[in-house]
Figure 1 (tube, rainbow, N blue to C red):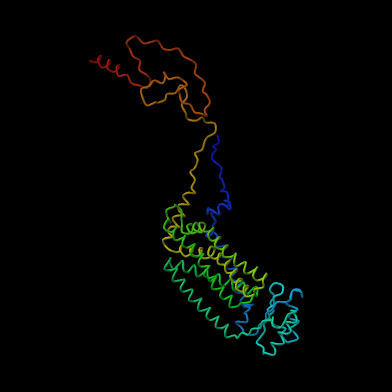
Figure 2: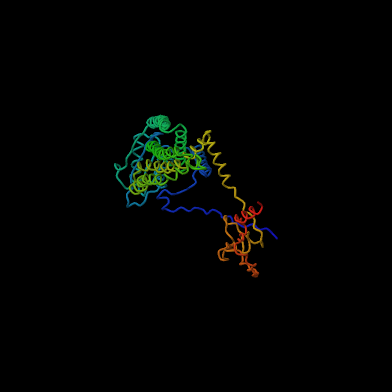
Length: 424
């Protein structure tokens, strides 16, 4: 007979699908830390593109950093939309065909050239007023020296260095130096990508852009501190769950504050988006565009880095500590034990189950005669076929009066006493 093993077929775990309700009630289980290599590849690619764009194209520094003369006006709506090519055609006879021309919306025009004399500025103003079908006084002219832009750049750099030291000191005091290092890495990541966006797109860098850079640093750190605070709370309970590691605890903390991070980012992006799209393109606010663009890019990268950069870097740093490395090894050993499946004993086909049937003696643990039991009271196997009752045999002759027949499987104390008397 062939031995066959029976057992439940292996069941593949189903992929867990999240709903909006899970996200809202913070019941998500996204694997942020386990798949951190994906975010590392994405961030590395963006940083590489940003560095190459900065090295090849550089930044389009505004007049405040390079110095020169700037004209700004709005063309009459009756003349149609303004065109950069038409403005260059107006400036070309004056020897300014290489001037920077920026069109915002439909009619707002900004022209920047090198520093010109008063007479040359007057000619350019008259030509631009004629093109815009407006008066000369409606064309604003401003002169900026390069020294002012240099002062702004040096002060911004000084403020950035001081900012890094203050933030690193505070985070070290509030949490630990590993969290401070992870937060600083995320901030540097945000700065590089934001600068790379300006280098790729060629948007002009103005003092408002520098102010926006300093603003987005604060937002990026705010979101990171929210996540780190939750990680610190869950660290006290680390090890109470079997198979738990520092990385899984960090991943759990991220899922717990995910909705809070999304809400914070959306609330911060909505007013910035209104400044960028409505204020700039609907009302022609050029100064608002320079400020809002850097904020918009910085807020998006800051929300991304707090979840996909700062926290995975923290988990990577903490897993190098002996305590958490031992915890990971113990979790791996527990997981290996859990995967061991107990073998199912083979069942030989055709053999009946080992169960009592009629006619067999059963030990009931007492002086009970099994012959006196009814057939219906005998235990049977549920799966065993009903046995055929044996042919009835004639009963033996009854014993004389006064004698006792011992029951099968039991002792007769009275018979032993009588035999003892005869020996005496």
